[in-house]
Image (cartoon, rainbow, N blue to C red; front, side, top):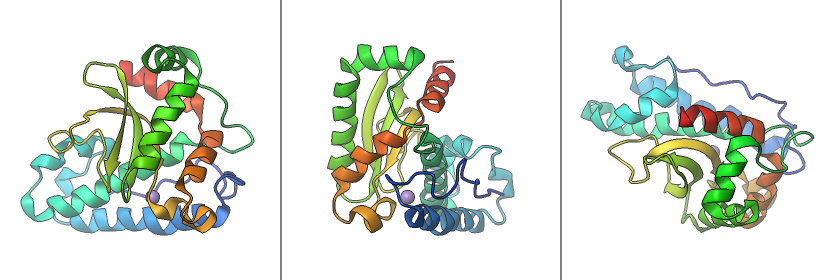
Length: 210
Ligand code: MN3
């Protein structure tokens, strides 16, 4: 069955941009509950469990109808959160600018890093209600940005329009920022840039390119 991944850093490592209490609740309560509910939904359907949660995403549209909604909601949220944690690093080491081939691709697709940041921030801040903002490699192998509502992600073939391979994601559900930022989602998104692990992002980009 699926398990809650340990954070790749201490709970307080994202301070001062994301506070320790938010990370503890977000990981230990929200993310953890999605994993529990996903496993509950898959009881009696153990053959559907994949080694990597990412591999379950393209299969959701064809799951048995009686478990599809529960697996879709909780499975996608498990995948999204697992990636969200990996997109960030300890504040002391993270942030800065993209590196390597990813930096070149960002510049050629969006103009420069500043314009890319504007695009992604606009998607994140403009996402109505709960959701996620993504940098992903689209079907043509080009970088693209989108926002998705609730649990949706670009791996959910047959469900979402913006199909592709995620490179970066920012969680814009209120539980990701409300304790520190309340209604100020733009401030949270602005702070999030200081936590991006560009080395990990560059590795995901290289893998996605194949
Ligand atoms: Mn969340």
